Image 1: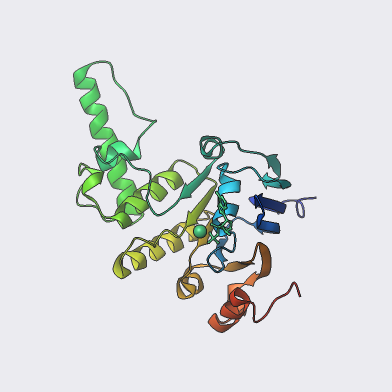
Image 2: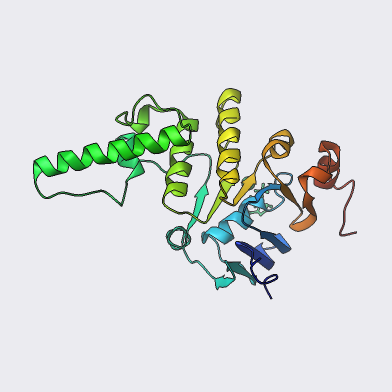
Length: 255
Ligand SMILES: Nc1ncnc2c1ncn2[C@@H]1O[C@H](COP(=O)(O)OP(=O)(O)O)[C@@H](O)[C@H]1O
Ligand SMILES: [Mg+2]
C-alpha cells in the first residue's frame, strides 16, 4: 500500500523504467515525496533526472512502473494534464506572459472579469491589490505589480510562477535546474524562496548540480546514477562528500 494511514506520500514513483532506443535512461526508479519535503534529486549529467521529471509531468510515458499522486494512480499524457492535477514543472525558462503585467500573470486563467469598462477597471484594481499582498507576504521583490514581466529578471519570473502556483493551491513543484540561467545573487534569492515555500508545506523536488544548494534547502535527497537510485535519505545525515561519493559511484548501494 502507499504508506501508513494518514501518511500517504504526495508523490510515489514506483519501479519506473524508461528507455530511448538502446539507452536505458531509467532502469528502475522508486522514491517518495511527502508533505513538507524539499527533495534534492541529484546525479551526474545523463543520470536520468530530467527524464524522471518529464515522466512525472506527462512529457514522456514510462515503459513500466507506476506513479501515484496523493495515493491515486496517475498517468499523465501531457504537461497540461499534470498541471491540472496540481503539479507545476519549472525548467530554466519559466512559463510567463512577457507582455503582461505581474498581476495579469498572477491571475492568468483566473481573471476577475467584468462586462462594463468601469467594472473591469475596478476588478483590475482588485487583482493588483491581491497580487501586491501575495508579493509582500512571500517577499517576492518586484518593482510594481503593474510592471511587464518581460522586464523582470529570470529569478523574479520564477518566483512569480512558483508564488502563483502556491497561492492557487498547487500540490507539488518539480524544479529542473531552476538556477542554471541565474546569477549567484539571484540563485540565493531563489533558494530562499524555495525554503520559504517548503516551510509553508509545499512539497518540492529540486534538481540541481550544486550540492551546496541541495544541502541548504533540502531535507531529503535521492541520487540517480545511470538510471538507478544510488542513494537516498535525510540531508541532515550526510555530508557534501557523501553526496559526491554517491553521485560519482565511489559508494554505490546497488553493487
Ligand atoms: N528524448 C530523448 N531521446 C533519446 N535519448 C534521451 C532523450 N532524453 C534523454 N535521453 C538520454 O537518456 C539519458 C538520461 O538523460 P537525462 O534524463 O536528460 O539526464 P539528466 O537530466 O540526469 O542529465 C541520457 O543518456 C540521455 O542522452
Ligand atoms: Mg537534466
